[in-house]
Length: 119
Image (cartoon, rainbow, N blue to C red; front, side):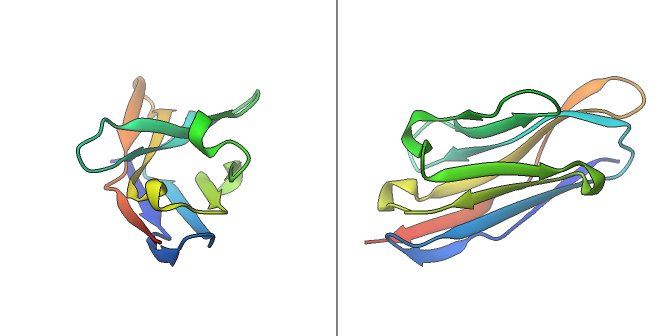
């Protein structure tokens, strides 16, 4: 059974930094895309950043220049370095992976990690 396990959320002051990690474990043959979405109270879930196995990364407009996504394919892990955090970045951050589990390509989600930025 495939699981995405997130870590690194927490409380930080505006202007600070946090680094999120997400490790995919279980029966994994290959991972196509890994990424992060976030959902603030009363808002829809939105893309933060995504990184395919090959090709260029994608960032949401509101985080460009502040956040950096990277992945370690050997560890099936994706990271999100968040700098210059703003109170409007406060949200639950969800890890995402589209991967092949031996039967089909499927989408998987982590349980979510809270990021709170105080002003």
